[in-house]
Image 1 (tube, one colour):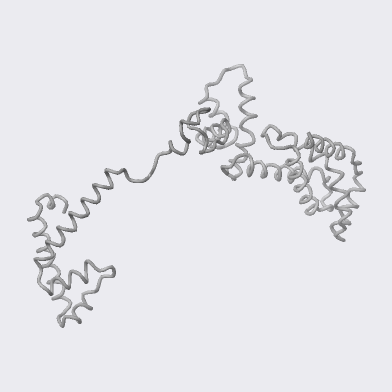
Image 2 (tube, helix red, strand yellow):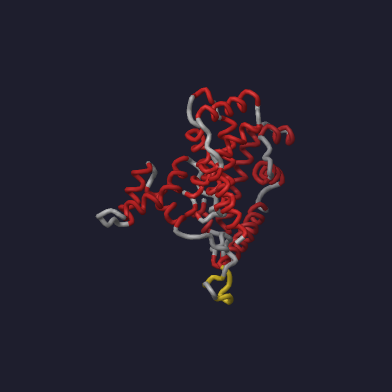
Length: 287
């Protein structure tokens, strides 16, 4: 009740503010523009508060408090007053309307849902015009299917049908807490969070990966046993180390040419392959 009373007082005060004649408005704008006279800017703003209230009233259907809409509109009004250029000979109300509307719309987009929607001009147009266009088309003589309705709206706003469908679904449902009961009214049904699919591997997948990893580890150790000391050193340095050594580095270390290192490495790999295939013939299919 207190909020409603405060809203009424605010609206009443806005409607009671005196209008400004064109010459007076221009004189105040010049005082603000040239001399940064705060009182002149405030008089311009207060004289146009009824414009803010009127604009805010057009967005009440989004379910946000009227007082908040008016406050955001007033922010836009002050921005317009700060940027207004009286030498252009345009009435302030015409210039301020865009800033007021933009400020209110930005507020609605930020607060209408906890899930932030698109902020492109096309997405904004879709968000604020979808309901109006849907109601307008539904009042026509021809009954349109949902698909045809979405096509008409997409064509009117210059967006894709997929964007219309996504926005329609978003506007048709409210935010729901993941801590809410899975079945409405049944606290014993668990939470909606419990119904979300997990991206983690299934238990049988984890066990299978563990067994396969151990099997591959045993195969590799068994195959490495077939290498001599120099082959083992080259394979470990070239293939099993995190930062593999170059042929030239190993050649210097072993006192042989890098071409000889390459030959030994190639022979060692062939021995490993043969040993792995011998231990498990199915390994040949994975090569």
